[in-house]
Image 1 (tube, rainbow, N blue to C red):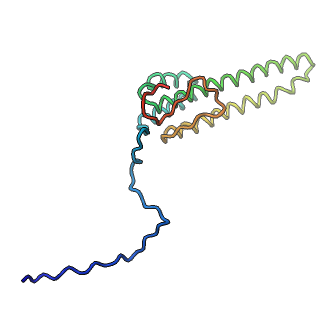
Image 2: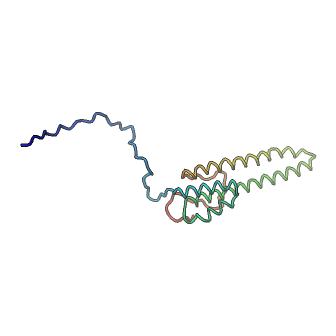
Image 3: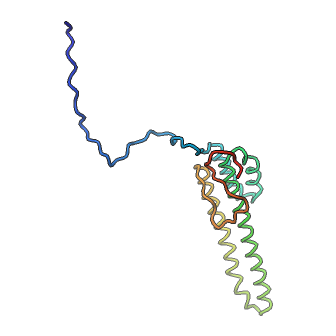
Length: 172
């Protein structure tokens, strides 16, 4: 015989399981979903640059980055298309307001100043459009840096948008 003591009987757990609380998941990347590709840090940086350079170089900076990276990254491709569409749209809206401004000036000259009343709202429209563009581009910079994508508002899609998280070729 051996001098070992028998194993103690199993004990019941002292805590109760609460089904209303979801289980905690370990920290780390989200589980892989078939067909969904999360952007790399380089993709996030290049997408951020697409938006950020638009503030300083208009369409030139985003166009260069988009042309270089569109075939290798769907995330950068989607962000490049979105910012280029937005820049073109804002240019068209600005030109419409400038034409209205010129027409209001001619109307003011032809009516001894009555048409000049239209100049203030048109100038305010141009100012509001500029502020809107600045705010929205900064918001899209933050989204690109965090790996998200949201299309720009009031944008005419001259270049077809693509899903930045779909697996497959970057062409759309």
